[in-house]
Image (cartoon, rainbow, N blue to C red):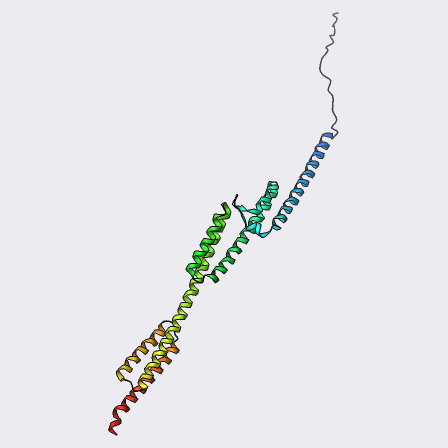
Length: 255
């Protein structure tokens, strides 16, 4: 009987090792994230406080430093303070100064305009003096500051000049009305006096015509209808009285 020999086989392969997940990596990642969050919160808080401090500092700057222009930079003197801040604080400080500059310059232009309007009642002279004043401010600044002054000044001068011109027209009309009324009353009185004293009827009639023209002129320049008709009634009464006086004089030798 045949004998079957068994052959033993040996396999060389690594022994598998099973690692246990203890959660240590996730724990450290959580700690790292928490530290980063805390750091960001601290930085945001410091940034917020810094911006607030810069804004408070800008609000506390003297007005003269806000509107005074540094010849070397063409910018408000107050902006030199921003050089000591970081970019974020400097921007916050500058924004406040710029707003204050615009408000202060607008007020300054208005104040100067009132002063010039009282000093130079003529709209033409006012426009010339204010334009010179605005140009001096523009020349002493540059960039956004000169542009703001130019735009604000131009708008103000246009509005103020228009207001002064309207006032001038109203004053001129009022003066013309007074002059026309005075001329009218004077001519009516002279015509009545001339005729009442027995003056030449032809001369009296000419004077009454001139008075009538003056009445029409007084109405044309702004007189009221009531004044117009009242003056005509007065003139016609004078004419009638002159006619009666002339007729009496003519017929007096017949009685």
